[in-house]
Amino acid sequence: MINGDVRSQSKRNVTQSKVFTERLEAAIARYHANALTTAQVLEELIKLAKDIRAARARGEESGLTDEEIAFYDALAENESARQVMGEPALRVIAHELVTVIKGNVTVDWMHRDSARANIRRHVKRLLRKYGYPPDLQDAAVQNVLQQAEALSAEWTAL
View 1 (tube, rainbow, N blue to C red):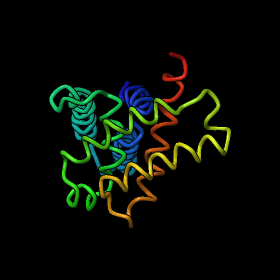
View 2 (view 1 turned 30 degrees about the vertical axis):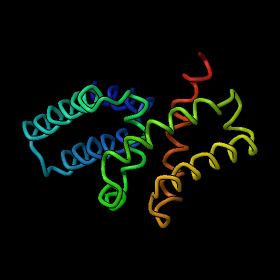
View 3 (view 1 turned 135 degrees about the horizontal axis):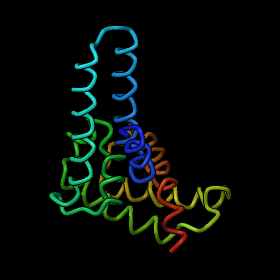
């Protein structure tokens, strides 16, 4: 059941999905290696389920939509970027990313190099505009593009 929650999370938020998948796999691996008892693995799975639920509710408290939270997580995955820029700046960037990417996503953007390059250009321009650390930009752009791919099917269907 938790694995299903993690999979459904991956359709909305790639970054959180990676974290939750790693935690789930680590708990199962430790259980199979007899490092955890059945009761301990159940405790870890319950904690993981609570964390997944809390992650879903996080957008309501922060005032961001689910899409904006997903892009915020993609940008804030690098701890040093979060420390340098601060949470308010990353929120603004996430909000603008949703607007810019939604406005430029086409049905076939993942398959056409020119369309991908256009979105990549918009993302880089936005990161430079807000002073995202240049040494971390390439990883952030890749994270944002992965997140856009996860959300684009829903966007192009609208």
